[in-house]
Image (cartoon, rainbow, N blue to C red; front, top):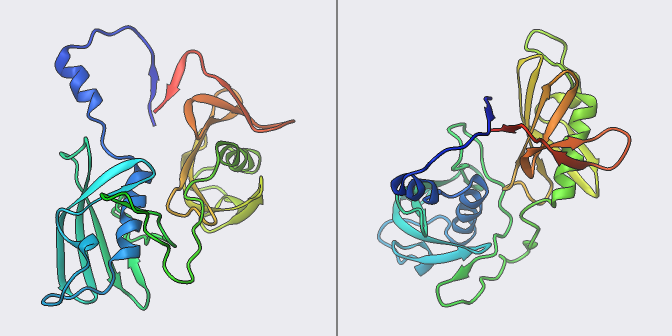
Length: 253
């Protein structure tokens, strides 16, 4: 993970346009794929398909607008989609779902074989009517609050410091570990310790598994973690609430 020092720069019109064309975030990709997961299951060729599962269908999730660019149903156990977000049509992303004993869609943000846990994604169709959650499924929060993200990252800050691949790794710093803080239960989804002065995690909260968040920590003469809600800021973890303060010279990217 690189450190970038801020400085003055002059951008051309083409550069500004390129910066403006920002693709969908990982959270937006997961939410859109969860919407397809909830509305489109076990579709097969040669049978009628719901309009929500057909090419050209438009829907909105959490204020972002998406379109089904491609829909492929090679058999009932495998349904595949290519989705695009309005304003980022040049960066479509896949949403591939299959029957593995339960209907599971692969996380569109990673090459790893990791399934999304969707529940009931709240989706708005082009006509403006909100889709209802599937029977028996609870409509849950799709994203932990900023304070919950900070509190969870501070837990990792306090318990996991200076870890390396060839060193003993405490259980609370390993993938799969769960803990509770700030009214939520959190899970360590990913953990990387490339070197003792740089440890990185992805955490998720129960009920918001489709919105994991980073927790990146470093040795800068003392052990610090960047604020998962604004990586330009440093978390102030010990001795009080999980507040953050400005990093005036450096930005984590």
